[in-house]
Image (cartoon, rainbow over all chains, first blue to last red; front, side, top):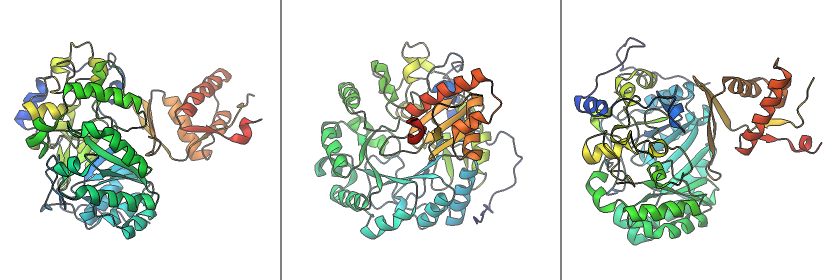
Length: 375
Length: 98
């Protein structure tokens, strides 16, 4: 029998009221995007996501900010544990709440999830509540014993990060020696037949090693999962130097079409404007299909949009359900218009690209995606 | 009374959730990518939920025990073929060979 643990620090709030306030910069940026394209006119995934779902499909949960490595592009600027990180009993209560809302999957990230003291109890509770679990890990703390112990949790899969197919490329981003340690973690997980992906952020340097990354993943019977570099967290400092060029993106689109088994986490839908529809969602799912819970209980539209101005609420003050259903920030966010992209002939296939990238590069949401392939 | 030509069985890993437009089908998957579909037919979603909760995933059984018209049943069976292609439903082998 599952014991439901409740947060005891939360003040009472009136159920159903639109909660919180919106930072004036966020409000102005969202209002500048203009009128939302009507649901009737919307195409693809967007017509279902407009207005938001009853609950997220996937929640990214950065369960701790503590990390044993220091990637130069870390989107959450992880390193040390933060003072108000959720305690284990609070984390268990959150799992129960997400299960009751029928969230399908929790994607654990950080920081490094295996540094969080309560991670084993949280995974156990997720298994009891039949939530699909994905752990995004740097792989360096995976031991043979841990890999064996993790077999008790199901369904569980892993994303082990490698941001290059060689130690030189990977370690220039993730730190000295991390490539070899990540491979060792992959080996331990593969030995136990865990479901695996090798997760790789596409940079202008790792672009040349895609085939190598594909081979490395295959050697562990893993899928390669390539994701987009976002200029959030420490990524803001290196984005200009690391983000792929337009030519690389064009070639990458062809590469993806030639490798249909490569996963992308739906993060390259802005490339649909090249005229080739990639697999997955064709629109941003932030605040509609997904959202991000950060270590200290902050809830953001997505893992890439951890800007204080866009905090929708905090779990120390409100339940997750209250935030998802009643946050004023989310309410506005779900009604955003297409901004400068509204009249574009390709809007129906890319829906304007990534709002987080727009915000972190130019502090605006009404502009085109800085990596728009039509710029 | 009509009968399904084959037995359509909902895959156990498939999760179903009602939404105002109908619902979502979600199948966990890593090695095989998984699947996600937005279904804008509340009737189909209710049928699949009934299959899962009352018929142990037997979608054909759920259809045959329903009060749908013959035309509606045939339409539902044709939709199920699409869900087979998308990986949410499989056809039980022994029935398929009959």
